[in-house]
Length: 347
Image (cartoon, rainbow, N blue to C red):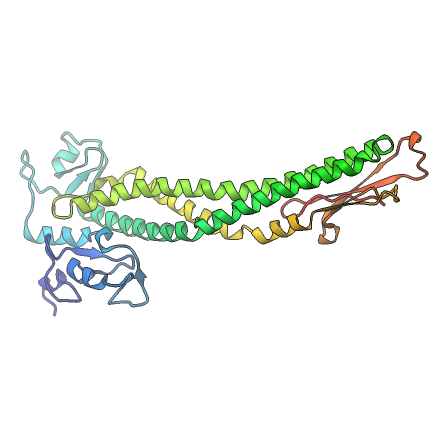
């Protein structure tokens, strides 16, 4: 049978934990080892758990949380703090006042009606939350490096610049082409510009969203990281204080940080769906062709996306009698909700 001292010893080096050079540090997988073993394991970039090699982490060992549940058991086995007024053990925590208290103070004294919790349960909750925050911090660090790289930012700016250049060129070509037929085809020119502009607006909407949404998520991630780093730094700064308990991890603010971290991770996962290739292909395919000899096919704007299954609304434009046109010009409008572009042509 293992002795009680074995419960307070590192499973790797078999030496007892303490609050100085062999503090119990918890890996994201939940296993605990002394600070010296963790430091030895962190020689490489990733720390591999000795008990479960499938679990690795790139969190610096200095930012790993202490196992407060284990420290609490060590503390209970060695000494008991007592209330100066009631001479009873300080087995509870007042979350509001951020202080340890005895049962009498909690029930009848200055902490009456406050948020009172048992120390043992609270230290377990603190340890669990600290592990989750470490894991989230690791995921968000990875997301920042993957989704907000300079290459992606530069590519987005180049695509947007190319789009603006193509937009200006196409508008110029449309206006120059219609200038030759202004007197006879003024209404058709307006329709072409209107529909081309809707194409541009559709592309620009998705380009701006693809450019600005990652910036917003990045900003939220940085703010989140700053708040979490403050809390984790506070834990590290009190590493040598056996009686210190980061009670602020029990507050609603910490729960909000966990929820916000989950949302940021989900938003980062959503960035994988941004399709630069599709938008670039659409921009490259946009074109205008003028055939002056064909009165009824004045302007073609491509690409034609009717084959992609868009819902089509048929509208008929009756030309002015002064144009001496013997048949109607039929415009085919295709509106696409998510990933396609408006198209019109003349029959």
